[in-house]
Length: 251
Image (cartoon, rainbow, N blue to C red; front, side, top):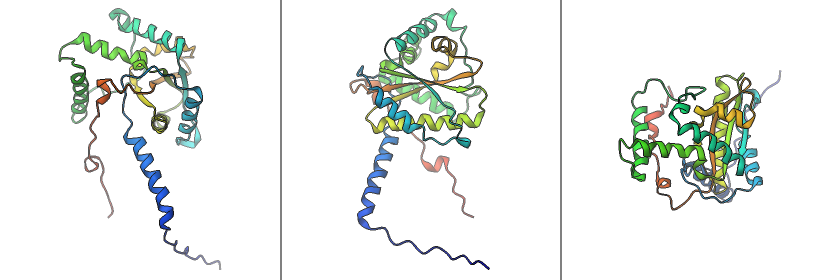
């Protein structure tokens, strides 16, 4: 009868080999914790090879049975400007804007605490930095509209997914998006993920020649170098402590 034996205990890791591990941990943690939603970028171009490298790294995101449900449309130059102009024209015209609705519900239909509290705080924190007073609808409208120029970033990303894919694939997509943002930070670049594009998915579909019956717009993302002089880029959002969202069960 075959007998199995427990594996031999591993020898203690040499001190010399612990240093690279600590450096790797610090680098990964820094890339994650330094990620912020940047709302004003420098016009400095991002080389295509850098964008490709970020996407190649991000594609290592896990996906159920390796389905890899992501499709990315990388916009710059005239193509980005043309899409931005079309969306802004619709956004700034109340009659046109009313004809554009979200293709999926990103936010809840009924807001409850603590989610509504967090939403309000980040909104007023941003407006406070920009000097936008409560009730100044014109200034709020203009600030929200900056989404559609990708906050002046030199690169705009539009993400789509096959309509046949279900909720699990959207979870996979979120990990892919996070990988892009972390890989960008590892290269000194910044990002801003943007659900605002969802409302104008029909314009995006037309401009990019998408088959709307087969592909669905997920979101957009600005990619570039943050403008260090922009006051809005000093916003750092709060995060709840681990004790607020994690429960450890050991018995």
